[in-house]
Amino acid sequence: MALIFPSAVEEFIERARLARLATIDSEFKPHLVPVVFVFDGKHFFIPIDEKRKKITKPAKLKRIKNIQHNPAVALLIDQYNEDWTKLAFVMIQGKALVASKREENTLLRQAYEKLMKKYVQYQKVGVGEMCIIITPMKVVSWSNS
Image 1 (cartoon, rainbow, N blue to C red):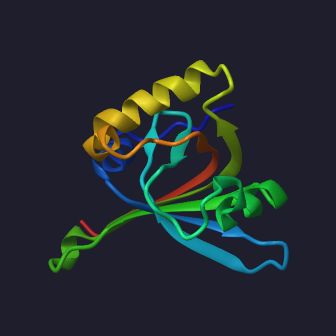
Image 2: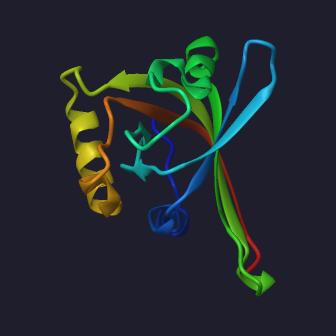
Image 3: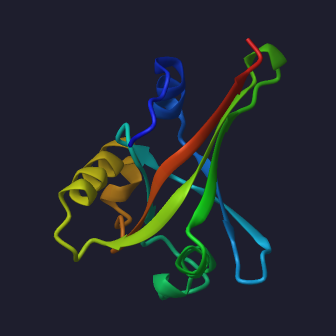
């Protein structure tokens, strides 16, 4: 059963351009990376895009290996402002899986279209073959306003 997001939280998520993805490795050490994403109301999609990385094979990225070992993840979307009455965050705890563009997946194809629309940079830098899909299990939000 999909979580229901309050409309204010969903609007905050839609406006956000960046999030931080936390995974856990096989030694239970946290790993945190900034990511771009889209949300379809039920799932978060994080592409493993084609911009330059130290590791050339996406399957060898630490976040991918961690998810394959332990699918529990957290995604933090936050907003900082010098005016502290405008501080806010949404933390999503969920289960992640890694999907490939090669799979015939309508959900993934729609997510890639949303990514291309949200981030025009993907018109020059490819979206990539792999995508992390997060199914939210718990959502925590806070706002100082």
